[in-house]
Length: 249
Length: 317
Image (cartoon, rainbow over all chains, first blue to last red; front, side, top):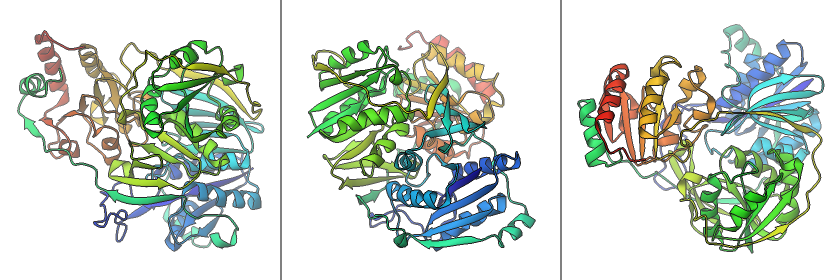
């Protein structure tokens, strides 16, 4: 089996976001960037499946500016075999991303495509489902457990009411939740080895898909700030404040 | 043109967030139709026909819609999409799973998780875990939108009498099979709609200690939440997780216990009306959003909190 894993470079989850004064977006210059957290889970799961002898090859793909390659390099360091970097100059929408991924899937013929369930920058939660629709493949979203069986996957999904288990035929798209596994750290020797693994570079413009934006971002602003609160000295004071001041109990 | 809302239900009852989504959908356009895909879900169709904001209910009854198989749902929705300018649903795990599949087939760039309707094509939505708000305008002819339910009040449930029309099912997918659902049953209010939420974090140290939280939840008729750290550590099940990748809650009172306040957690609760933080680390970021902060050991504070609540005789339900 061959697994394609899509990874995205985003502002690191620990960075305090700052909105640009002109309302055009958020500050990304000199800000720490990392792999989107659930994409790390997607790579880890693919590597575990390969280690269990159920997959032969893992291809990591990213779409983004030149530096987005770092996320592919990281995936190679934890166990992906080779990488693909599709270059785009601007931020593109999930619909455009899924159209690019579809082209790559048609070229690579993977049995499975894994990715994180949501990117923590735009918080869209769309790409996996869109790719599944465009390929007419089954989708298993928000996966917290994956069992690879004969030509099918049994996937446990995290849903609002609890957990749901579905079975999907291969080929399939799986979007990964944070509880799917514990992503490993790359060892130094593996980081060195990863530098020798190939990353194929492509230009989105050569793939013949429409990646023009459909959504206009009119402005980005800071959310309303909460008024500073107070510290209370005791539980008794807290309960009195909640009852008499905030009137919520 | 009209708006088509996809109802979320369990074949017997309408799931509560559908009513919040109805409010938002009718702000987009008053001609709101609701699509009920289900198996023997006549009660659901009837309940929705009584919602004054709903102008028409389309009911498709077939066993292939008993569970939310996105592939099956999508095929049926696409059949009806032609006559609508907007397809909408709530932005919970139901709508998040479903809507992008529809949008891609309609070649539409979806607008996810809106918190405000500015006009038919312009919406406000949080990005970066709610640390920025983006005003976005969709230029697609047909729009697919998911609605953050807690940002809209639920619609009135009675007084209307919309027409219910039956419609035929679409083809079922043979590549996805529902196996089982493990639902956590609880007598407590639902986390997403509770008036009071009390949440525990890593500071709880283990699952048994959540008893301290549930005792207070019982007293306050509150729902129980948790940080991702507490869920990851196995103290409590995933359906309790509040945060960027869990549930977003906006209760009147949110009590965070032993939660440090990582950005991802704040994303799920910082719009709450009143926030209380109980944490022994006075520097914990949770205090920056708390209206009332108590720097204390939770193992001492929670039993005291319960006994103080017991002294009050006017707990509002």
